[in-house]
Image (cartoon, rainbow, N blue to C red; front, side):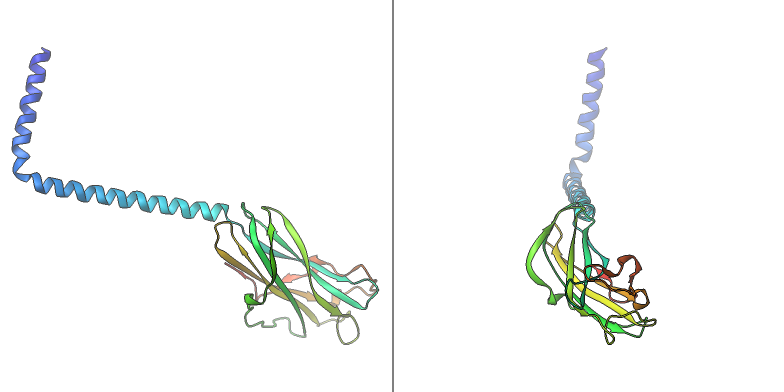
Length: 208
């Protein structure tokens, strides 16, 4: 029984080999094309997986307003920001700069932030960690920071870093404080305005 079965299979295989022999080159060419397409498909899938891994794992730096704080023994204040790493890899070569401007306009246009102004040797910020930094001193007085309705204080700047895959990234920020929230009784060492009163401005906030 088995001998008849294998004999039949052998005869069929011999017939098939004879039938396709004239088309050997064409079949080989088609097989080569199929193998090349399959290899290309695997390469595309692998590249997409690497891209997805980078998106999920890379460092992401966001900037939060952390208030305007009075300096001790001086009639000056300083704006604080919190640099937060929302990603899953350390951010390296972290550099930044922080500037401020006053304006009577609630829709003040910053017209671009030049990230090349960043300074420093570069810090490392671990995943899900944050660090607080301060900007230039802000004069407190009748002609500068004061309790005044309609006057706005803009805190703006940029942070640059490496995202864990050696790619350089930047985050720009612009926070708007309404000076009507300046504390009436300014005390040295205490907040002049709490960070929760700040708003992300409509202009100047971006990330790569």
